[in-house]
Length: 132
Image (cartoon, rainbow, N blue to C red; front, top):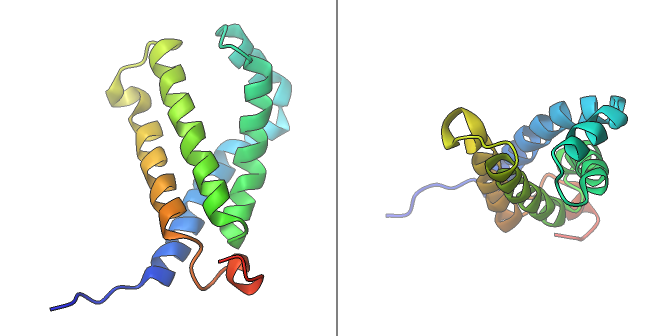
C-alpha cells in the first residue's frame, strides 16, 4: 500500500520555512556587517572577516533565492555547509554544548540537506526556468 506523497508541496514548505529562518538571521547581519565581522574576528576563527561576509551574504541573498525557488539545490547545499561550519565554530570557538548551544545548527544542516536532495519542486523559479 503506497502512501500519498506531496513532494512539490514539501519542497515549497521547506523552501519557504528555511528561507524565512535564514532571512531572519541574515537581515540583521547585512544591516550591521561590521558588527558581524568584529564578532567573528574576535573569536580568532581562521578567515573570520571573509567567513562573516560570505555567511551574511548567503543568509540574506540565499534566503531570498530559496523563497523564490531559484538555484534551490545549490543554495540549500551551501546552507548545509554553512551550518556544518557554524556547528564546528560553536563547539570549538564558543565552547557551546549540544543542547542550548548548537543543536539548531545541526537541525538547520539536516533541513538544508533534505531540501538540497529533494529539490525545488514544481512551484519554483527553477522549474519555470528549466533548472529543475
